[in-house]
Image (tube, rainbow, N blue to C red; front, side, top):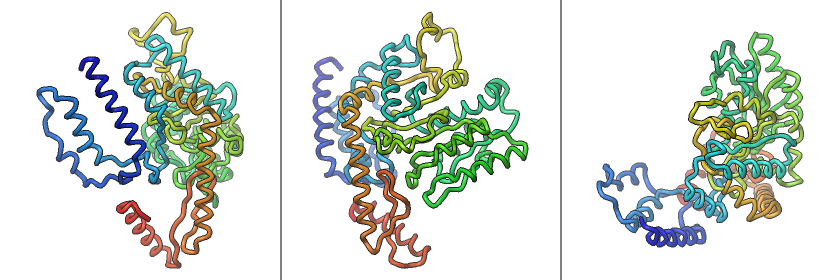
Length: 426
């Protein structure tokens, strides 16, 4: 493809994206295709000769687009959002054009230093303790695995990487914790049997006294508690675990405290929501996803650590082909996580923060919370519906309740949900 042809289709693609964003409401929220329908429209073998871009673009619109569920649709309520914005999209175009591999400072100096700067901006915006250092991971699941691996090394005096685990280590998380904690426990060598689910209270938040009892019980049984995962904004109800009380327990028992704030963390940019971070001075690692609620397209997960040296000792490796004469003067983010290859994720975050400003982002988050409160009022005013959890942020958990028994109610709401998803209408 020569320059002129590239420009021709570049303009066409931008026009298509702009129209798509303006006309999203005309699409069904959920793709209407059946399993295998898209695959059956695609050739079984790759083309021997290259095809015209016009034909490829046509097939994108005619074959691929019908198989897309539209996450940016104004009626998308299926999962926590994966927000997007024009500045983020434009920045991704530049990132793709640069094609930078950002594993060490020397391979992309601007990428490394911009990442340092925007992560410090985010730390300030959320109000995390001074001194916490940040790195961009792909997802909160990866960041949580990084935290569990780091906690493992800290608990074994950095011997597990060399010798493997000689003694069972235990992780603690609430009954409402995200499934990535279990996956991380399996991958990091703790084992599912050594993940303790701590009971929650009526608001679905972890009960600190139950946590401490579990830790003391495991110690008495000869096990070694290693890590607690607290959640700010659980997936099922956006429950907020009591960070201050949990942090004190972690300090008493020398446990690593990781905070999963994947969705709700963005709310901490609001002065009125910073109370969720009370006790953050005891946090060892913290993750939230700008790609969920900060208008930055997937993937972009912000991970912070109190002591970067512990993180680096867990992951650093120095093959000859990656050594440079500047290593002592710079941050090489290859040592801050699992991946060696790294995308230039900081660029889109920089574009978003500069385009909206802190006040612009606050306005959007605050409006989402206001709308949730309004919807909560509608539920409370309707005699056939009931709230199922407190509404603290932008998630409202409710169900239809016409007085049937619990089993019948569950079946009724399941059928209502299926009908809503099939028709796209309430």
